[in-house]
Length: 322
Length: 213
Image 1 (tube, each protein chain N blue to C red):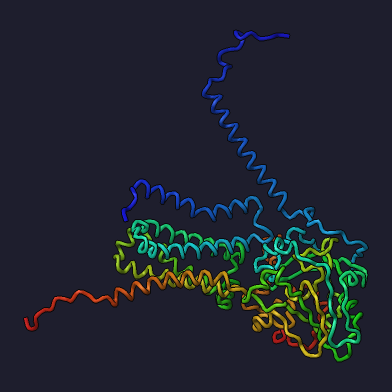
Image 2: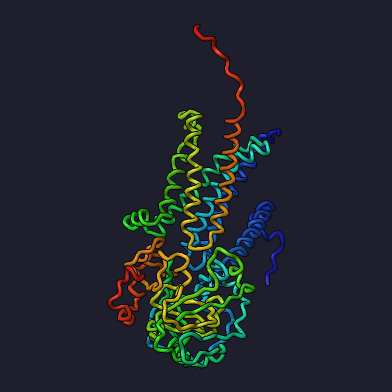
């Protein structure tokens, strides 16, 4: 083994002091930049649409696939739960996730009344066992011009309706969201919307196999931000028809009031079917931006469900009955 | 009040210049790091819109703050603040034209005619344009101080159109746009009161020319 004596090291190989000092500075700087970059990448990995970052919701079991699901690629759990209108919590789409975190979904009962043979109060855990849970991957079109693909878990609304045995005089189904101002900040302030939120469907619309009660998302219990424990999903209508956190379902013979229609009747009709030909005073409904895509895509009649639901509206002037 | 030393004022202006770029920088940084959420175009639109209105209101508060505090030298910041309002307004418009509509002229014309909040927004920006173009010392000279000042009162209309744009675009819950509206109303009220006071103040009697000379 050859050990070089100091004299063996050529003076040209000795780094001059200023050079190594500035090199130290450079290394310190590089380390700082590296840390910043790593931090950035960390944030990116933990915020970027990964479906792995779940809210830790309990898994639902016994879910069956449905032929009514679309084959389109669902949006990430992250996007679905962080870009969402839930006006009871906030009019901002990014805030409800945090604000709804501690929302209490137990105990929870749903009252079914009105023109039915069997009015009843059902516990949410009873409702969960009413029918086999199905995965329904649906297109979701918001009236504001954006859309998503969402893998809901739920069961046909018709299964719940049959429990109550509506009378032949029943023509409409009205839904009502919980009134919980202690938990829902915007329910404490006036000037947002009339609370509680109410929505409604014609009975034949409600009985359509595509209309579901959703209780889950991505095989997990429905996150609070998406309307836990029980929400309506009507994929051929604008998203706001999908009323959240339902506590009451009533059957009526007259057309019930609906929240957005009360707010602005010229903008939001009772039906609110997705219709690219019916312009909205605020947003063009001819096209939509699918979350995750840059360019807009054309909006389809009844959100692409025209073959299934078109017959419900035969002979109805959809420009007038929007 | 004594003006600060020249050096300090210059440093303060340079600092303000950088700080005003902050919102644009944050947006860029978030965009680069994929932190703009599910609908980045929506976030960019809202953020640039918010800062346009904010800078308009900051610009409009320079005069009242000067009058109230006596810090006359604050006038040195006004042009820069106004140009920042125009800068963010232009980013906002570009987001609409490019990212949202992707240069679809037909669609945009339809939007302008059909949607009153778009009409109001475009009006607000258009009213800022001549102000930005004539913001240089050369243009002040060319137009003459009086006429230049008159022209630049368009900022009142622009800010009002901006607030109306915000009010009309909100679906429900007018609290945020009305906050901007209230601040604007206060800033305009200050000017109205100042104007009324100068009008109502008895003027020194004009020297009477004897008749018939």
